[in-house]
Amino acid sequence: MAWNDIAVVLHPGIAEHIMPFPRPHLESFETPLRVEMIRRHLRTRGIFKHVRVARARMATVEDLRRVHTDYMIDTIRIMSDLGAGEVGESAYASPELYRSALMAVGGAVRAATLVAKEESRHSFSVMRPPGHHATRSTPMGLCYFNNIAVAIRYIQMKCEVRRVSVLDFDDHFGNGTAEIFYSDPDVQYISIHEYDYDDYGMGHFSETGSGDGEGTNINIPLLEHSTDESYSLALREVVVPAVETHQPEIIAVSAGFDSHYADPVGNMNVDSSTFWLIGSTVRGLVESVGARGSFWVLEGGYNPLVLGPCVEASLAGLAGEEKPVFEDQVPREVSQGLLEANRRIIRRVREIALKRTHS
Ligand SMILES: [Zn+2]
Image 1 (tube, protein in one colour):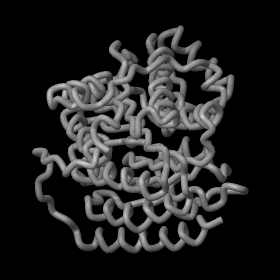
Image 2 (tube, rainbow, N blue to C red):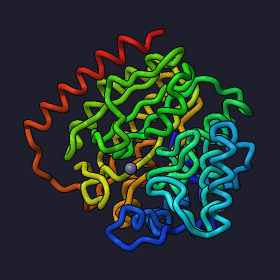
Image 3 (cartoon, rainbow, N blue to C red):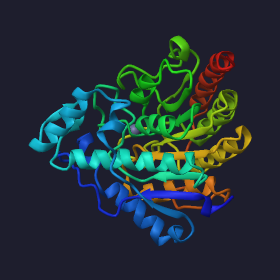
């Protein structure tokens, strides 16, 4: 198991969708520069010599329909043709929107398919716009179509995959993905996020799924300014045992890097070490549950200068490599009170999650 078991999914043409807002508007941070700087970093570091590089294909309307309503799909297409206008909260149209959004979904589908067909052990779609806030019927929060949800439905339909675990480590709660799979017993959704009631008023640990999906939604809401120690504890105490209980055939990862301390949007305090640890943990889980592999889809992360090292750290973890040392890994002050509060939250989530996931 090494670098050559990993595929990185890209598209040589840059998806050009840009929302017309100046800084410091939230919308101004979600730009093509994000993926360009990741590609540039991976190229400079020689990573493309070791991994498989795969090309994203544009998703079809049929793919989108497995998750989204026709009304939503038509609205995004029509507004994109018009070239402007609001399609949802913090989600605006541009002339390139529809094509960019279809390419981002297509990247996720390609990444998922490579792993589902066992052509690669792990894959990472470096595409944008992100997707995890988009619900079945509503674009929002810089997201239009829910890339990872469409990819999961695709491999369930085409590649004989049933059980999937989603790990979402974006700074923000993936309300869209949680909603789409909330009553689905086959798709487990685990989110580590900054708990913020303003963030669509969702993400509390009491939200555990409904109907047949009861127990398959696991929220780990950490406090603002949480550090690497709390993420590490959440992975060990909740994520690992919960995924081992669910026994997925594939692990899908919503990879958001906006919890980095240098991110202009998120408010957490982790560095690239945490993203290496997540990669390494997912690699271990794929082994321990005997899954086909994991596919990763880029979500947030809005500081173009740290995105490259963060993605490389994740890939190194997946490849079974030692943690790479980057300049962002500097000692930072840790509040003992915050650590203790997070310990209590994680303990509570563990009690809830492990009691309910054995069905
Ligand atoms: Zn985010």
